[in-house]
Length: 382
Length: 212
Image (cartoon, rainbow over all chains, first blue to last red; front, side):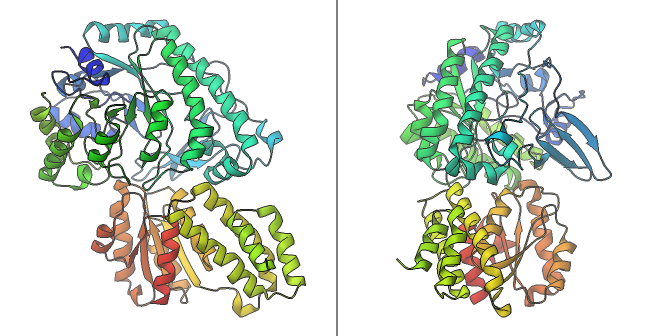
């Protein structure tokens, strides 16, 4: 069984020869820059590090590293071709911090001293008071991608790897708004002024479809899995009521998922952090096949409960180890125990792609990561 | 329904636009400003907090209730007697050094304020000495809340708590901590007095800690 057959078998809820592994490729399965440096040191490799995601400081892991880790999934390295001028995008710095504003007018800052991430400073519509103000927003134009990039996925496909596009146009239908109006404004608007939210989400759907048209213009026929990100969960439950997610947000995802699948991706993943147990049936209904990163440390998200209740209907892409406690702060022995326990629960009958719960952060000791990886290798065979 | 009950309902359901009119009517009817604040608005937010903890309402409903309360407090403030301004006491809050996240911290500040505290918000990326400075500058403050969202800034939370203790300020303030990766166990380990898993619980624990 090659990597692609293995992944597709698991995604179709059957047991492959071994559990497919995704470290470094899929959405929220990646490595932060300083952790990746530790990994390169461990393998005795020297590389020019290619960044994949600036705010979270994530890298595009090299094929060499992914081969050494025996990963089954490969992600397209996108080289976006900007379409027209964007009025918001800029970069600058002052004495203490690096700054940039993205195409959505969202400003980020990273401290120069010990800064590990760019964090949100503010959105372009934070002072908007009504629909008229909202309309002043100048939408980014979805980028196109060079046709020559097709070769990368063709080569991965020929080498037997499963392929994914793990980047999106903006954030999700729930979570793009906070980046523009500000968290509190947007979340209040959802319940007091929904008439300001729906035109925005309508347009976002239109633009996301245009984005995927551009993606499939370049990569048509070569993408197994796409991923949309929309964080619905907090540590203890959903941000907004399950009813509102079901009625107001997920119908947009359903339309987008149907469209993406009509273009040839066989499976759709939803990335959502937090406790989302209450809406898993609705997530499935919206056409998502896989859930990532499966935050097992959040309320009602225990591996036993998730597998028993939803294991036949959704694939758990993640959930391998708790990245909020065990992976950064446990002992290697605790990491081994938890990894083995989670594999024992999630692996049965397929429907499981092993990955960490979210990207591997800078504070993860290399010995803990290796303890997890070795435990996976020792226990991944069906 | 009494005017104060109407105010309570308006805050609970986030009816910000009608709050001003209701408070003016209540005052005209002879209601005491302090009763409007305590029995109308703070009581409403206490109900909101309980409903949030019970999972009956979510962040947006809590937010709009707090915004309605904030609007109401602005209107009622000039009518309160000078010694009635701070009902529950002062609360210093901030996100620890190296951590720039403020969504959770702001929700906590909002619910604490809605419980009747005067909140002194030091913002994000707050060095331990800034917390110490603020505590010393407010000798009547009995509570301080520290937030960390990231596993990578949990050590900074530990450091800030240790610095406050080392500065001898534990006789003045009780320390509350919170943030996604924080647990009761971690809070106990670093010497904090209280841990809250969410904004509504933070307000309840703050009230308990000042009462104890």
